[in-house]
Image (cartoon, rainbow, N blue to C red):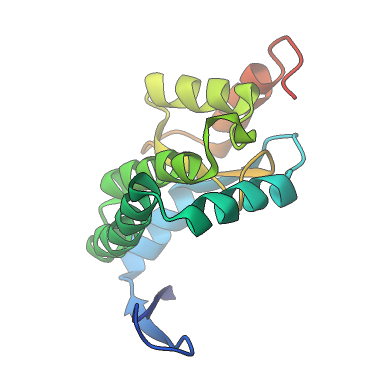
Length: 172
């Protein structure tokens, strides 16, 4: 078991992808199996519109978007480093930063983070039940990938997600 990091050079056309395999220790794999949790938010994804926003913003090459892409690349390398060292707390923080950067890519009014998802992530983070996490895919709903705090069960987290996600109002 392990991870893969895919990279490409900026100036080579056609695009050439290089893949590096990263081996994880048995202890790290066991810890990830215990603490990496995938939770259905109960909200379907709206990826088409979000992806359109991201591509439109990238096409303009504004300095904040170019900087954000650079940060996303840096965080991918950080995530590999933390996972290789078995540092799941830092990996969780890295996942949270990744989510912030993805929201920047999509733009504030994109719907990338519905209010109920924001509520869930704030609750889980403030209660210290997760080291961090991100909404999978383009955002808008779907699944949350979370690194649970040591000793917190998937059932604890799923209960909090159901409670916070169902909490009042129309979250479209």
